[in-house]
Length: 166
Image 1 (tube, one colour):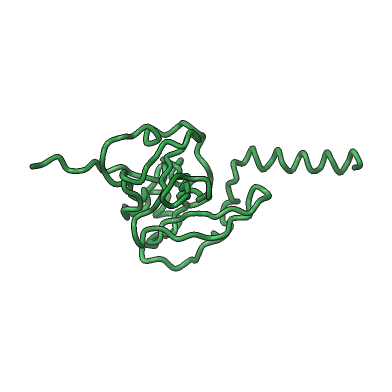
Image 2 (tube, helix red, strand yellow):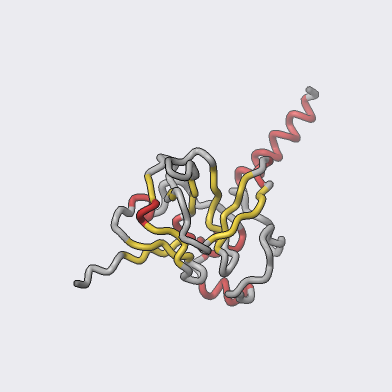
């Protein structure tokens, strides 16, 4: 391999890592563009924190172990931070050791998937079925009964504890 080829490839890889897999502003999402819950870019920016916007709308990834939801153990429901659609139950959450909240199954009709070719590899992206927000990715190295690991950005979720009313 020529040194110039190696250097160009190394620089491209470093740039991809530095950008955290984030798409360029204005770049189209790989998912469909018509959703039940749709807002303008200005409305999304007003509704979400900068971190939520980066993940949900620009497909960024939060740093591992940065979300308190990774250590959340109470019974309840995890909803999309963009539109509050319930997407995961605490009953399917497990500790994967990856630094992100992980689940072995979403709630019925809650998420959709698409092909993600960022990071110079092909992965399966998980997004909210109702608003299209990027939640994370799904991998085939999870526990039974599904064998799947939905690796989800905590900033893309809102936790609603189960009611303790009797």
